[in-house]
Every structure is written in C-alpha cells, then in structure tokens.
View 1 (cartoon, rainbow, N blue to C red):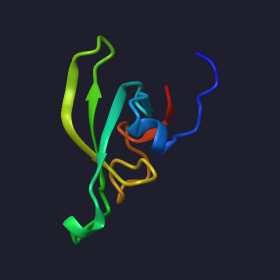
View 2 (cartoon, helix red, strand yellow; view 1 turned 45 degrees about the vertical axis):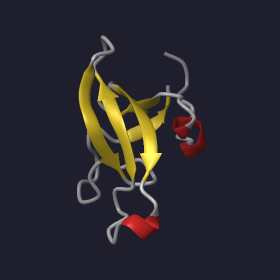
View 3 (tube, helix red, strand yellow; view 1 turned 90 degrees about the vertical axis):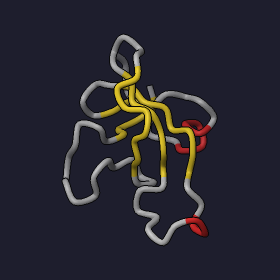
View 4 (tube, rainbow, N blue to C red; view 1 turned 180 degrees about the horizontal axis):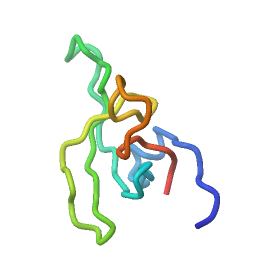
Length: 83
C-alpha cells in the first residue's frame, strides 16, 4: 500500500472513501449542521465497510477531524486518511 493521503472532508463528502485506523474503509455522507444539534462533537455521519465491501456499520459518527471517540486517544474506527 502506498502513502496514505491526508483526510480531506470535502473529498470525503464528494464520495471518496476514507481509510480507518483498523484497516476498514468508510464513506462520509453528511455533516450535521450546527443549527440542528446542540452537541456538534460527532457531526460527521457515514458508513463503515468490511474488507469485502459489505456494510459493517451503516450509521457511524465521527468528529470533524475524524475521531470516532473523542474520549479515547486511539480507536480502530478513527479516520486516518483517504483511501
């Protein structure tokens, strides 16, 4: 595998898959606008895929910088770059 491209929210929202820390891939398909929620910590919404392309979790949320859990330093579902 070549060098991982940095996470780019605009590219992710335009359909490019993201790479997760644990090896899975995901698609980010929405950002919850600030006016619709008081807690914007997990404002990215997307789907995580198994390596075979089947859906692992179809409703995953991340922080805008790609963290899956903000209270855990490292998680296998963190976004670490673009696929």
